[in-house]
Length: 90
Image 1 (cartoon, rainbow, N blue to C red):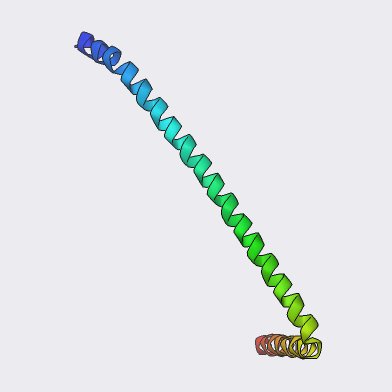
Image 2 (cartoon, helix red, strand yellow):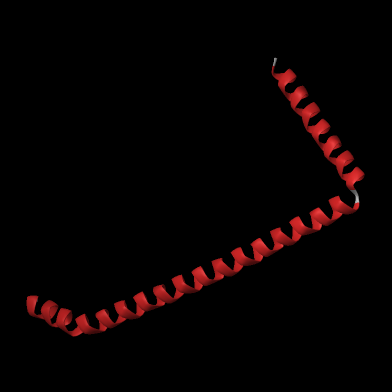
């Protein structure tokens, strides 16, 4: 019985090592592809954020009074919301 196990071990050792190498190569390729995709997504996100910022700056320069009013209204609304939430806990 030990001879059969030893023969099987010897016979399958090299194919298993080959399979292990193929698996490791596939994992490495998948990791490289994932890193590349993550970089592309990050670059696109940064470009979109920069475009949004530039667009916002253009609108603020084009409509300064409206921008001040919107900022004031948003600040007032958030302040009122916080005031009521803090008061509700008492």
